Image (cartoon, one colour):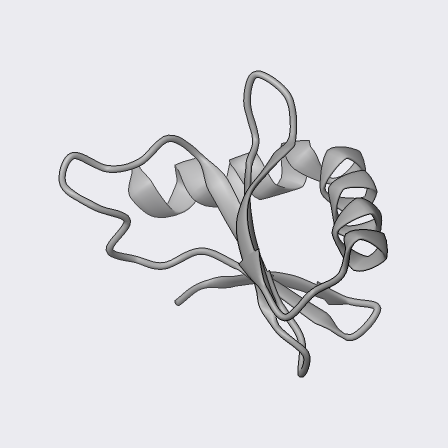
Length: 80
């Protein structure tokens, strides 16, 4: 489970085994309250979550959008 970065109490990561065939690029974010998954393209969008409220999900979406290039670089570097 490669961790891309940590910020605001969240760990942003993806799983090394992302399905067969592999799912499109996305990121998971987890803190003590729960976890969420966000697709990166064509726009950052919420895929699923548990334990996080709308406010936390909105904050995550904004943060992921701001760091999307970094997340995609980590994804491509890991899976290439």
